Length: 94
Image (cartoon, rainbow, N blue to C red; front, side, top):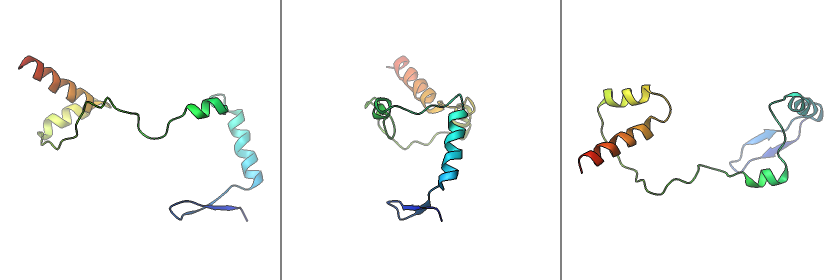
């Protein structure tokens, strides 16, 4: 039976058996696109979302469906592009 661990939420997770763990590590070692982080690199990792500019405020706004769909159709980053479009309009009409 594989050893288990209990998470903070109460879920019980089965850990891999030693032979499974060895197979996983062998696969990782054979993959040229992966490498194990050193202690210094691991310490530089940050958890969670990156810190924002601090100059934005969250609002609820009703926008026509066709306008939102047009921005979404342009791919990832559509909210930033919508913000830039509104910012450009505000500068022209200041």
